Length: 589
Figure 1 (cartoon, helix red, strand yellow):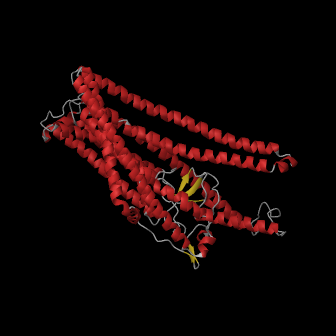
Figure 2 (figure 1 turned 30 degrees about the vertical axis):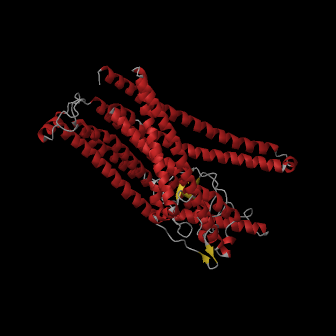
Figure 3 (figure 1 turned 60 degrees about the vertical axis):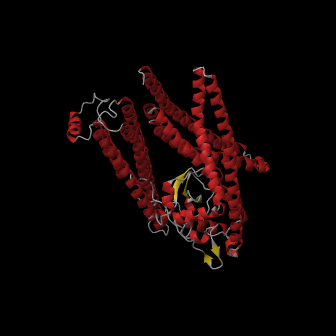
């Protein structure tokens, strides 16, 4: 799918207003950040006390000495870094939120001006078509204070000024948000690098009488808490500096939020292509509404594709997130045993996949030891694991496919029955193509998570957990040096993906505009040649193609920069791993 849904989108879907959505997100992510900061500081303090055999005087004297040259023997610097993170990162977010807060969307004056202007333009066009004297061509260009249009002109001016002021606020908030996110990213990367070096260089694990494994785990958890803090703070920064959403319960059950990169989408209210690059959108429901429909006061009565009856518009009952989850689980209630078997086969397949590298290493070890019998035994075991892996893969893929097809059959037939049960008024406001799309494309997209995403998520989760455990079991120092770059690399590719998604949408819109120009020109070539409009059509097509080229080049440059940054991070981690791994081997570790 083009849009990925996260926890923030689920919170928004469960709110009954934009203010409730913002408050829910603020409450949840503030608590998450506070818990992560508390556990981060707690791990640093416990690690320092463990290193000093839980002797508070010794720990306090070590803390007061502040000898930064003893990086590999002292543990108090972990407490200092945790306290610094607990103060610095939230302070940056609080300052940016205070300076870059965006207030309400277009003011009432701006909305009134747009509505009045649209009504005036429509009235003028009707009078002009009817041959009246009040057409736009005969209206005065400048209205004096006693002219009937003076009040309208003044209202329009105030509306435009309010819109310009609001747009300036949005741009300022966006710049501050990007600057704050970049600063948090740089600081978190530095903090993770220091923690990774600390784990590799520290020589006091277990020296104070504490548990070696416990102390290593406490220090390694700092990287995890840093990533949780950054995630929570980034989400808070995004949510508290965004423009207010739009909640129209008579049109859509969830709040709508302004999104960029929707140039190729169609408005679900008026069934027209969205002009421009911004629109109001509910990501979870894939519901789009153009700015024109958002500004109409009668949108609930004139909108298409809404649930209607012979007595008028039907209000859809609100469902909580738990109700949605319960319904989703109910769809697979008749296939519980098959779904459980698919999960079990997938788990076994992941386990065998994790065991293969171990036996590959054993084969190499037996060859280096010139152990022929051990080599043949390791090869036979390796082949047996490969054969079992093939059977397990076929089993869980077939099981997930059968479950998805059964659920697809049940959903599609039940949806068709419900559609046929609607009143005739419903079909008057909904096209047959829209209903057919619901029965085909939308149902297929709804079943996609069961068919592929669910199995992929479980497989990747188990593989990640097993791989991390094996890496730390083999060498916790090398594992920490490798994992300190995982968070920054994921953040860079996520930021580039969101930015590239918007550019791709605009580029496709430019291609669509060029195709529209070419189709109209070629389909009416006689008219084009009769009016000598070839230069105009050439210019329009060239402008659309040039806009697509410009966006494509911009996307390519962003891809190159992101690849370079992530490549350098990966290269740095590789250099550290090779250097420190070689040092461990040379030192006999």
